Length: 244
Image (cartoon, rainbow, N blue to C red; front, side, top):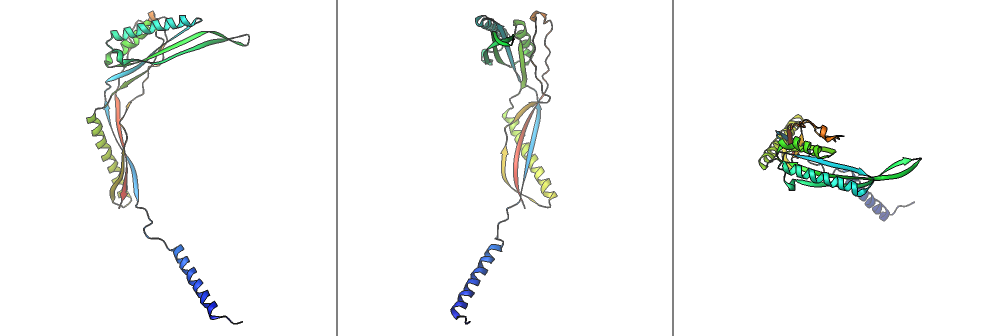
C-alpha cells in the first residue's frame, strides 16, 4: 500500500502539535511559588487597680395576687434606690436591667395549678467610690433585696496606657518573628499585615458576689467585706511577616 506525501505531511504536523501540547502541560510555570510568610501574635499587659465597680441588685416577690406582689416589689426597689442615692451614687449610675412577671404553679393530685405570681426587678449600679461597694450590698439587704450578684471591678484604661501596650505588643511580635526566622535559617522581611485587638481588662482571679438570700434582713449585723484585687489590661498584635 502506497502512502501519499500529503498523508505523511499531515501526520508529522499532528505529531508536532501533540509534542507542543505535552510540553505546555508538564513544564513548571515560572513565578508560581508564593513568598514564604510567618504569622505571630505579640502581647503586652499591665497590672492596674480598679477604678469603679458594677453591681447587680435584684428583688423577687411572690404572692397569689399580682397587685400585691408588684406593690411589694415596687416598695422595696424604691427604698433601695433611695438608700443607694444616700451613699452618693448618682441616679444616672443606676439603671433597670431586668423586669419580669411570671406565674407560679404547683402540682396537686397530678394536675398543675396556678398558685400566684412572681415578679422580679433588677437594677445595675455603677459605683465610682469603691469604699461604697460593701455599703451598697448591706443597704440592699437591709431594705429586703434578695438577689445580689454579678459584682465586677473595672478600669477604663487611658489612651496613654493603651498606646504603650500597643507598642510593646508589636515589639513582642517582631521579636518572636525574628527568633522563628533565625531558627529557619532565614531573614525576616517586611511586614505584610498587622491587626491590633482592642485592649481587654480582666481580673487576675475571677470574682463574683453570688446571690445571697436572707430570711431575716434584720439578722445582718456585720458589714459585708469586699476585696478589690487587681486587674490585668492586655493588648494583642497579630502580625504577618515575609521571609527572605
